[in-house]
Image (cartoon, rainbow, N blue to C red; front, side, top):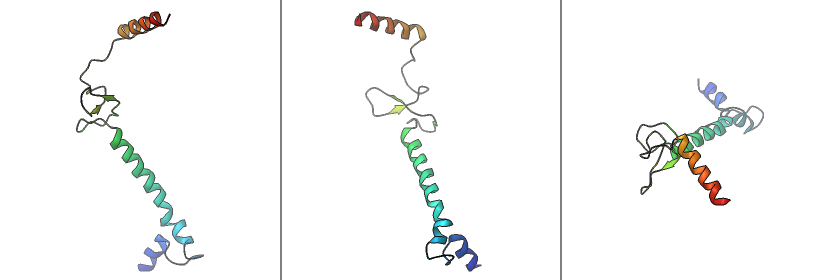
Amino acid sequence: MWYWILHVMGADSLSGPWYGFWSGFGSDLGEIAIIGGLISIYRRHNCHVKGCWRIGKHPVEGTTYVVCRQHHPDAAPTHQEVLAAHRAAKERDA
């Protein structure tokens, strides 16, 4: 049993002292780092409301919280409001 564990981990000398390790168990270290990085990015950028899985992009004014559109206290602008603001900006620039 012990030999089998050493063989899977790459600790027995196959073609050299480190070849088996980096070809076996050691090659998984990079994948573990990628998964850990993705979890860190998700935890850093998700909504600050407890239990919300959405990505938080919208800062709450007067606080350090960043929340998703679903939890932001301000109402989202309507299509007409966006068009009116665009027209006003174009008229200011002209």
